[in-house]
Length: 525
Image 1 (tube, helix red, strand yellow):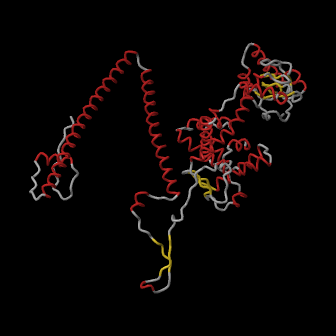
Image 2 (cartoon, one colour):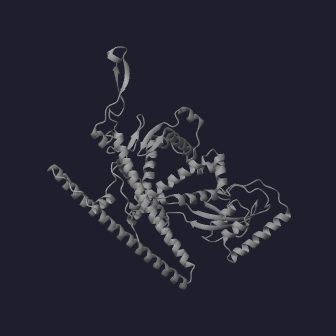
Image 3 (cartoon, one colour):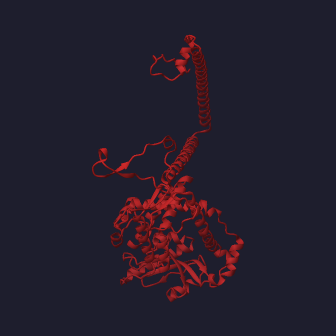
């Protein structure tokens, strides 16, 4: 169970003490990918995962070295794909819940809290595991939509591969078996699948009871009962929860008696009850694969998956290179991104980004020299243009991207809210009779007409007020121009008409030196 749990939590936060001693700076930033960072701790966890996979998946030394050399590249790839998922509005929340529930069922945990306790008991950070699981789902979705959907495998390619690899596709005779085991002693501990447990000498009564029960099950199967359902309900074997599924067996994998009785059956057939050391067993052949080269139709799916994988890898690397060229990536000296593109944008730090210093003496130019920071006056052009350093330009680009992403998300959220409201409306209507639906729809239409009428009236009033204000501003501007002209010619300017002054006061911005004018009340209805 412990080994299975660790294999499921493959992206855990477990830290090896030996590796931790080597990396004294835990949160040293190794790379920046747009507005995300990759730390030395991330690289350390990646090495730990490679070491674990090497033990569990028996990786070759060459495979281990290749993964370690590409560790930073893979982490940058992941950040780029996660950021792309955000740009595309891809969510992984529902898939994360389903994925965690599948793990819970596989681990036979009663609740999600039980699964969390099981994980933490193995030194796995639950929150980090969930985040890594979510990120994995996001990256796979992006790869599927942006890369995989453009990769096609034709029937001719499948046929060609089949014709050229018949010797490799050739396979020995195999059967896939399921079992129903009625143990002589049902209370004895269940052995592991594929292994025999310790023997406990049964009594004659126990053997007779087991034989009677297996015969009854055999009769139910002959009458049409489903094998997997009976296995879950009645079997004492370790595979009962899986419907008795034992997997595939070649010849000589089984005891002689079991082989002779199962390999003569066709798919869907089952044996008579067989007496073994542990009790009585019935075997069902779920699939029977004959020796030799299988027909194309039976291996078409496997060939298609293999060809798809061969095509998608270079296409994915090309796509990730494109993402690199559109991103801002900064790698700390001493580290290498093996997937870097020569065309990608690099942050350039200009020489004037840091503070300048100079040596000065005290008053009147006497005394010891001391170092001071030089503060330059900011020119008008600097105030308007902002930072011209590479970092400043990168930040502005990132901010623009973030704003675009937020705007896009706002539009999508509004669309999702409308869709949810429409779905709720449909759900509400589904519980009404036809007469109730007609009355409800008529009432909704009446409310919509009233709302539209009110909105139109408000808009009309706003336009009317805006027009009056524009006219008042134009009149006031004309009056001020005439007053300026009169003053220039030595004439006494005419006082502003009372109505024009009021209109100008209502529309013009307040002047701190003028007497506040009364605000004009506007009736909106």
